[in-house]
Length: 341
Image (cartoon, rainbow, N blue to C red; front, side, top):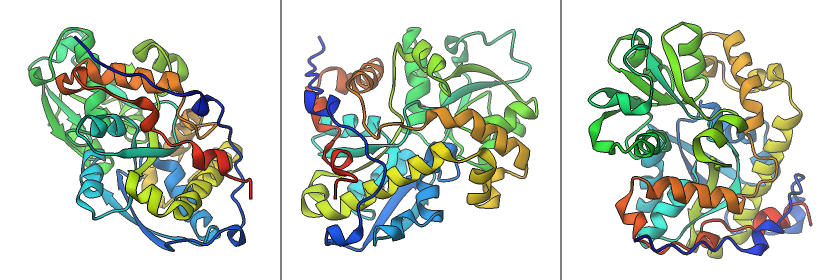
């Protein structure tokens, strides 16, 4: 029997977003430099991070952010637990999984409200693969084993009564290496994000089996909202360096506001050219499609928390038996205070 405590408290629903960051003079930072881990920075999933970096929003808050880009979200989480990074931009689900392992890992701001993950299958397999259960015995590329792309496929399989051990997961990263793995025929299917998926779609290499890039697609898959990227860190870091965490949150909220107002052309001009995967027009189209995925409030909503947990318990026996306090997976204080001086 599942034993879960779903405590998404009223304080979260009452939290509101004020996008403008507070002036630096309003606080003294405990630390002026932090190390941030991310798994696949060029992905549009992590666009708020790149914008905060490239538009100077971290600097506006008086903080220097050293960014370490890993091969996938699971690796950046490992770096946080191991102490080589201070904070991570990664999937919200990791906060739930780590609580089940006795680790106090909390999100402090939501960056994406839809996962944006797509499960796509190699062209030529249309008659053989009509649903996720048909992937049994096949090779599926994910950004990294244990990453949110891996969880996404696990959930789709579990919905059809198939265990994750029935497919072969292969870590292919989140950029040109992922595109190349599919084009070389090393994979039967791939779970990844834009611009990787957009590139493969445009070139006619894949067909889409499941798509969470839109609200409609997300609700069809999960039955409701499902949070995506967040900024998360250890509870002890939050309590020891609250002003530093506030500065990071303010910078990310400024990035979200900038993205909301910016055109695809302005976004494409702001990111490194290599993020375009050699095709600027493709990147512009992917940005236009992805803009609705970014958080409008900075808050992980209670419904999203519950849906994320329900997704994980479908295929994770440890979580199915764990007592999870969802109110401890997201700390709303910093979004609530943002812009209040």
